[in-house]
Image (cartoon, rainbow, N blue to C red; front, side):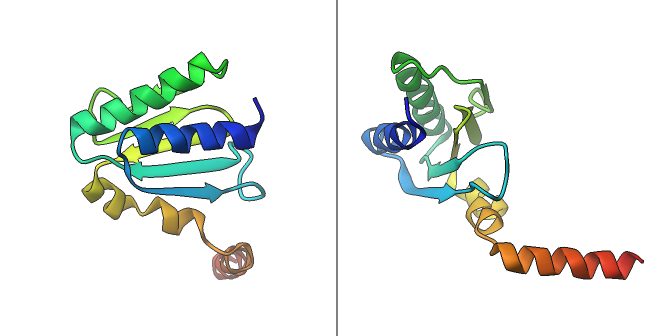
Length: 123
């Protein structure tokens, strides 16, 4: 399955499961770990678990079994690693605390400038 189709499948499953505030972040060029992050909120620990399990199940049905999952049992922050797409499902308070969208949306030039400044400070 092409990476864009997998990304779209994850979004579709999340929408069908009534996930809230779904956001797709293209992280190509920012990390070698994955191409896309799909971040969504669930309304409760059960909702977070259900969304993550549905994403993993539907991806497996399409021939893309997850490389791994984390946090599904706890239901505060569940991660489904589909290699080229990593799905994060969080309760709103957890999502607000970690602010992954803000972290991964940092402008590359601004990040390079910050890294140079930090390097100069440590010299």
